[in-house]
Image (tube, rainbow, N blue to C red; front, top):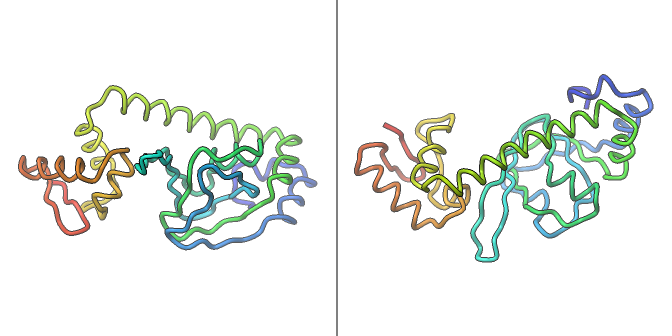
Length: 201
């Protein structure tokens, strides 16, 4: 807990509350942390690994809302736990996670008393609000082929190890549409398709 940016500025009382109630957790890749439509009772403080948070439509299609990185907290998780309302999305571990779980009531007590933690939470909400505005803008004003190319070019790896199904989930469309666009990109020598991966040229 000491490595979170707000921790050093907490009162000794709040530090002790954190350390007393923080439960160390290891979560394997591919595990669901919480599900859309269900209330969160605990709040994750992520130390290592990353988490995908997505929205599921009644049609069965998904769209990625954002990714959670180490020493960030999930806004969907916080909002659900603080307000005791159903989560508006689902969170799944993209890799093995290390971190801490704390009961919502303990975190709410610390939030009410500590300006440094309040600032940390508001900065996270500002970050997510900006990314959500960008997502809405992309969906509304960008063609899907441009969104797909942007996503591929923003990847940190090449070749990119990802399935057509997973790409479709990130971008909120169907696997068939993604496969067709990727075939067009391959025909135009933008990329090469391999089993389970995509190599940008």
